[in-house]
Image (cartoon, rainbow, N blue to C red; front, side, top):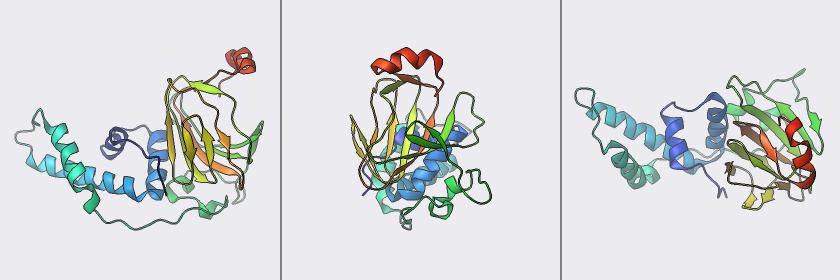
Amino acid sequence: MISHHLDQTMLLDYASGGMSHSLSLITATHLALCPACRRDVEALEAVGGAMLDETVGGEVRGNAFEDLMARIEAGAGQVSVPQTAQPTGVEIDHLPRPLRDHIPLHNGKLRWGRQGPIETIFLPCDDPGHRVRLLRIAPGKGAPQHSHRGLELTLVLQGSFHDETGQFGPGDIEVADPDLDHRPIADEGVPCLCLAVTTAPLRLTGPLGRLIDPFLTI
């Protein structure tokens, strides 16, 4: 059961084509796993198209956005979409297609690098200052305590993790902003596989992290 979703503002940005490439990638991957958010995006696209048809002389009424959100709330649940299977491993074929098409392979396989207890694959990213990473975190291990200079979106593909805000399982997405200071830890069981997008470097906030933070660009 997916319990952590993207908010309507981010879904509207995605549906309207206003998102950066990196944020669009993680949003599309979340949508591949989350029927509820797919319904919302389909409703946004349908209502947006209807609004364009209703526009007279190229002008949109001042309350168009409020009308749009009200119609989404009223009709989003009526859209039927197929279920998508959850990933069961770290093989490339088990990953959602929006992500699978953007992962660099070496002889047809994933090649992991290591940063402390976290294995990492960096994905191509053309957005200045953004980083897109596939992370594999061993059970009981996690990232250092940190806050954010921008946004950090983390989508769980396998396993789960917890932090100060709650627990996140397959399909859940956490949106962290500069107000959140946290330390994500992978739960026991299988390794936690995540797609993570940051729009600016993290800020380490633990005792040791504060000493080395000026020299890092993670």
